[in-house]
Image: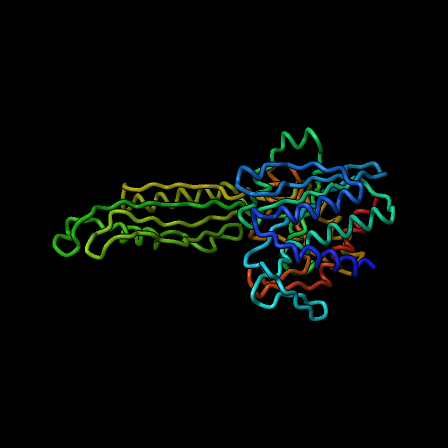
Length: 369
């Protein structure tokens, strides 16, 4: 029964087109679903700050057991192209017909949460308070989670700080508890214009200077906690002009903020070996995620997976998600897998058996008292 209902909910949501910033129909579905379960709903209407049309949904299902409760999170938006999805089912493997993404990221996570909560409520299973937090805009930089007006939220609802995020790629055998912060950088190197054919010796080629800088910069795998990358170089000049400007951009990820600072300082030191005509601009994309209770919560989730025959393991990952922003707000977040593979591509597929395993593990965790 759980399996069939899980698949029904998943398919219903897959057929709702919900690209980033255009998730209102998907949000309406979730709100109605939770209201039908008797949930208390609060909507954080911060979407105007980034041009979206869907709120962050906060829901509370009051429990009959004392305790701090638990929060559950997934996001409503999918990666394009996703319109006119045609689902291809081969036993437990669901995919698109290859012309669109499937949208299992993250509707599989959302289906696992909604199915689990519905089962708990309809079977009148005793539980602590359950909070469901559904975010829009995750795929475009965690827009929903990034822009939550927490001061307003806390006036209406106070979600449990232990948070299960159903948005991990791969099978239901990993529970991610640590992820890096990510900083973007943009470095502009100045030069001096000159005619490249008549008097090039009067010029300073900014591209050439930038190339020397980049060749000396520590990049890619720095250590077991830190990565760095240069991804774009821009300098648009005619062939007969020595360019006086070159911009290159990239990112640094690390589980330690101080390592980001150290690497940026190292980059500046390298630049100064070649020029004093430069600027460096940085922007934090998202904060770091780390366990806040020495993995106690993570081990409880791992134990819930064991009850459904899954030997799950704590995991450190290299990407960011809504969990990073919730962690900054004081949530103790863990990210669980739901069987999504090849996400963000038209080859994306979902192993529904894995989604169902996570659903059952959530039910067991929520009903543990």
